[in-house]
Amino acid sequence: MQLHPAEIANELKNFHFFKSFRQDLLLQVSTMTGCKTIARGEMVLREGEHNTSLYFIRRGSAEVLMGGEVVAVVQSPGEVIGEMSVVTRSVATSSIRATSDLDCFVIDSMDFEQVPNKDKDHFRAILYSIYSSILVERLDKANQRVRLFEIANRELYEAAKTIQFTGGKKVIFASSDKKQIQLARTAIGGSGMDLAVASSLQAFQDQVQVGTCELFLCDDQQTEILDWYKTQPQPAPCILMTTKDIRKEIDLLVSYPFFKYVITRDLENRPQAIRTILTALSKVLSKSPFGLEKYLTWGVEVKSLMVKSSKDRNRVKEDITALFKNMGIRDTLLDRVNVVLEEMLMNAIYDAPVDVRGASLYNHLSRKNEIVLDVMQQPTVQFASDGTTLAVSVTDPFGALRPETLVKYLNKCYAGVDSHDASKGGAGKGLFQIVETSDFTVFNIKIGVKTEVISIFNLDPNNKETNPSFHLFNI
Image (cartoon, rainbow, N blue to C red; front, side):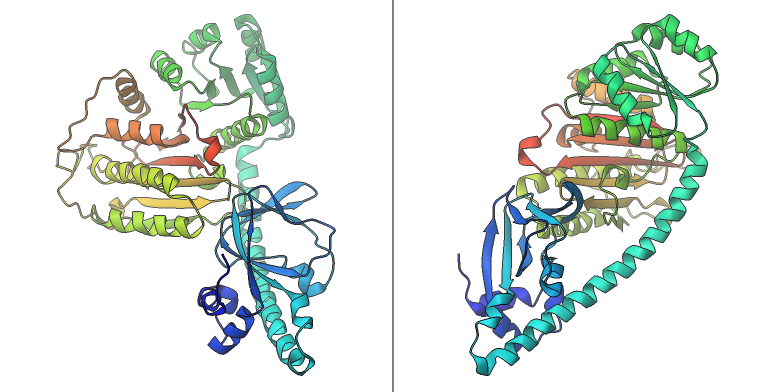
């Protein structure tokens, strides 16, 4: 649908690049601005090709590729695409591909050359004003990235000292599945650690006797090894790897409640499975499980909000929904995010707070009672999206949720035993609802310190998990 220049100007004035433009200038720019929709999967720009157009995102998202690899995601209204190739009049140094239906405003610099000679200087000045605004914005962002890079370097240095992947440390993987073994070799191969594979109890015991083992991995088929492991002093942590069948997962955790670390993996999604293993290794060996950024593309901005009271949760949900909606997230997914946030916040406000003896402060109250939390009781909400994944989390400063309690609640719900008291809520039903509504959920627990629940959603509507699952990290 073609818009009137006045309508285009009304939208452009809300874009960061045009904040300094007078209304009359905006109207003149709008007469040279068109509308374009790029279908999901189509290329906006191709690396190495000439480009004369500036694309300003109205709705949707796109990924930036260099050498065929995704290096960034653009998705905020007003973000510009193709600017540097236009400003420098050189070929595009990256490709841009729409990851959803992408609505853009398009300004073709060549159109400014077609105006009458008497107006050419004036319109060139407008074009150069756009260029200068873009370059100033890019410089600000570059300076911010340098600062973040320096911070990340310091954090990586500290993490490296903690994790100490190098130096011949050993990981023993108990599995007889060739596909799983290959995935583990690929994931661990670049870490500097040695991977030993054991497909039987005897082989596992033999490997334990040879040198110092930093970590065990064990798949859910190795029940003989699992039975033996639970009788041992457990000198090294063990990550239990299960399928995405959540009912089987619950049954396993009921049978083996001593496991502190549980992850699921999809052997058909090789990149995701490798990332899952690496993320788990990093979290366990660094003893630093917290943070939803571990499940998103590096560099994504994570936003945080504090929740001061039970009434405040509505404001928090509205703020998060508004932000995601502006990013082009579809309403059906936002409905799921709201369900998860409501349950997370209710648990963090009513179920998590305990006194110094560990006794619950508010769990006995009706969920209609207003709760005002002091500064030390307030949960933190975090949320972000990298264009392919959306994540929200709630962290409470109590750490009152125990893994065995989580397993008990979920087991009852999946068995059809509903212990939910409608008058005052109930963590069991809430936790069950979080897991079932998310594509997958991560529970990070440090008992007596804090609990973080992370919900992950796939933005691709065709990639909704039919069998949602959860990961557990109990540090």
